[in-house]
Image (cartoon, rainbow, N blue to C red; front, side):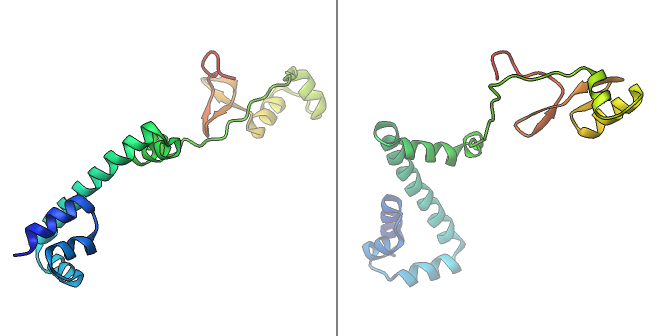
Length: 153
């Protein structure tokens, strides 16, 4: 039986053609066995996992010693928190002019406080929370009415 030699080679190389050659069979024989034998398929999958573990260990070693790009790739492959870490953050470094409600009312030709409140709500810059008009802050795509943590721009 050629299976033991094939799986030993596959575990060490992850290469089906080279493993088939080491076992003395053609590659199509391997694919037929994988298709028709659930036991072969399970052993095949296990051997490929072992080969991947060896590859990951080698990649990790290289990433830690010589390759920042490989390190980033491995972090993204293994953790969702790194996978989508590329975010754009805009920082305002100028001044912000806070206009009193009276100024907003004059500029928008509104006469009553209710009209001013409605204009602010319609703009999306404010919303009602617990009966109070509060500014809306969008942080990383999430709408919030709370300030950024201390030290954050």
